[in-house]
Figure (cartoon, rainbow, N blue to C red):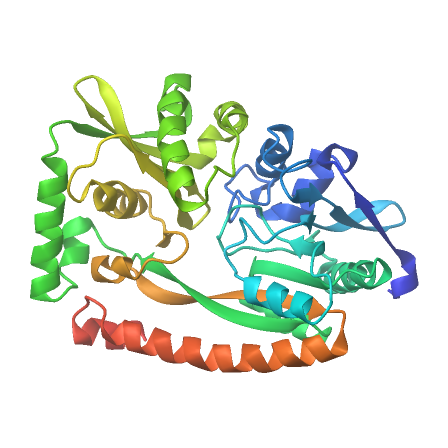
Length: 395
């Protein structure tokens, strides 16, 4: 199969590709009715972002979905966006932008292959089975060519998989290593089984935290699927707005997104809500993958000691254990997660700079950063809450 036989196009709406073709590439493992590895690159999730106005005009995330076809058949797709800023990415390149512009360049717009507002690792080059090699090459080369042809500063691929990094490096992209904190389910029978793997002091601290959190004067519920009601989103929207205003200045998702979630995504969701005196006072939103629970958003209207940890971390662990999920990814940043059993795990992104001099400078930076991240992961793992013998077994 040679490159001339592959047609690359860019379209501004998912509907121009269609759900069947998109999901045949994005989640072929779900063709039998099972769950996708993660829901974030599915047609239903990306369409909810698009239809709710969470991406598109005025957001700085302008859809430019990348499509590769052979003889009219869609063989590969990628969720690509033209970006006019670096918000909602969680892989920070603000310093690169400032340096490039101080040197007289124009950093924005840039191209970004990513799931907007979602720092969760997953496939970014979405491939129909049987076209893995040709599809990856077509998407990478097509995205680079579009960046170059339109005189854009750069192309970025964020929260991709390690396998995608290896192939893309062969095709000329530079890799960047970052870290998050993930919890791993070691076939625990229950939460006490997890606690037994911890040092005595950490075990006591977590038990104390959970007891205090659960003594907030109300009840904690976990809802999935049809258990989720529209009223729950009214409450969660208040929580999300509060957190968004404090962290980002304004929320990334629109209120309409949660209506689309209720309509098309509730089977992918585990919503943890705390109720006190007949009112919802706090909540955490998780998405369910094939092997992973992805913690995404948290918020509250009342502050109670350790309720954040209970809803976001401990209830997520409970859910993963009960449903046989292998891990919990609790989102970006947060070294406070370490004491609660979430260990540092590497995450990856890919980058291509059109200016050779700028590319060389970024490449040197990335090498030094990788060394620093490796050292930080090693140090933080040693400081983790697990018994030393458990750490050695996990390694």
